[in-house]
Length: 112
Image (cartoon, rainbow, N blue to C red):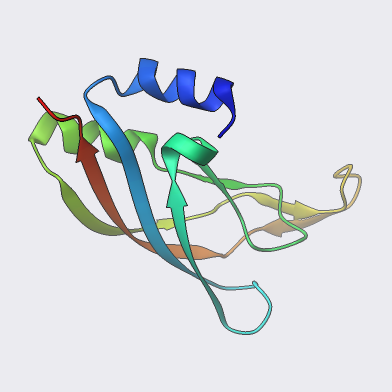
């Protein structure tokens, strides 16, 4: 685990031990879809898009903050990437990414 990621997680979500995201990504990700398990504590709050030509990321921190304020521990939803597809320098742009994730977020609260 990267010390910076852990420190940043503790500052942003002091009441949580971790945020676990299970997701399936649809769109241009190779052969159909991509299934993953993701930990905010270990990897940070951004999930890279699976399209190799896309420069976008999925941002789930706002969803987690909404969950905390609503007192929720689990939530399911969808989020579009919306990043820009193009060459690595973005000299050539191919348009907006159409990838989408269907996610299930679980908040792991700290023990009292």
